[in-house]
Length: 129
Image (cartoon, rainbow, N blue to C red; front, side, top):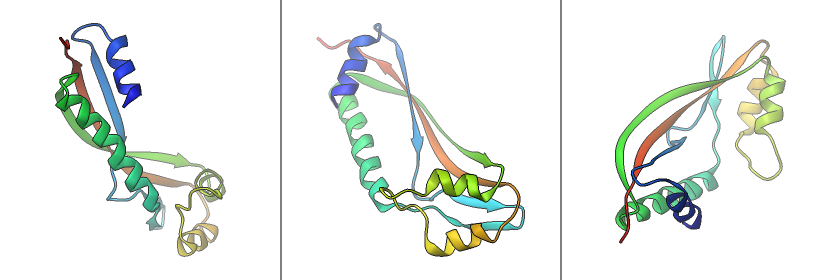
């Protein structure tokens, strides 16, 4: 919430703020030439996402920002090979990948994509008395 208040102070009156982030569910899908291999899932992400969206909703409730427009789009993050994807999405802190998905990736050759849905929300800074 402090970051959003700081952002409000930094914007000129009527200035615009673009907020964009993944939406889950649906979870990001891993797709190869052979078809869909599975989903990337991390339950803690949902809690973090809800908290972030709650903070933005609070700024609207407090009259700091007003919503202007909202759109959702799917984007694809391209990886030249499964090893690149494994390196990016596998770490000890966040377990996004199931054992089954990792097994499918390791038996796949060629490029793979992670396809996820993002929301883009535009807000206008309001003057606070």
